[in-house]
Image (tube, rainbow, N blue to C red; front, top):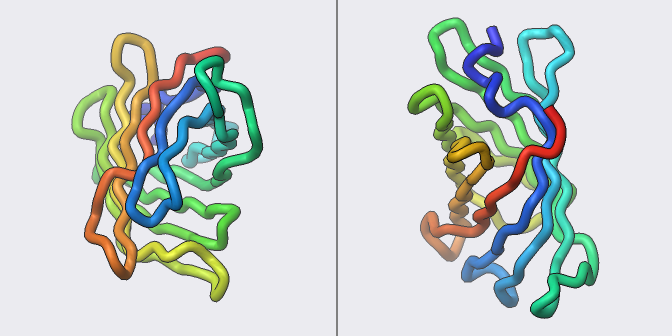
Length: 158
């Protein structure tokens, strides 16, 4: 059931950029993403990131953190559940575009009373020349979907 996600399995690390009208300022980040499979018909997902400063990319503190499940469906589609440490939970639906690209968009966004303002999101992941690249767009109550995160990560395990 998880063969369509096989190219994602492993630990990925690299840098990216966060930029969105809802952020106080744009920033660079270092990120580690893990896609793992334990024999069930799901793939677990975990992402940790740290803000970077300066030319050398010195870590200055935590950025964002999220975890979830990628659930392949018999029709080839994907159900993806992601929870954020900021109090947001997103339910994405999507599908592989091809063997190394996956496109997702939210069907539902749940927020705690103190969470970030998020109303919708899309994500595009791709394994390009051995690296995992992605772009996330996010909408808020004041902004239409706009790019928020992008990164290029190298596989370090898997």
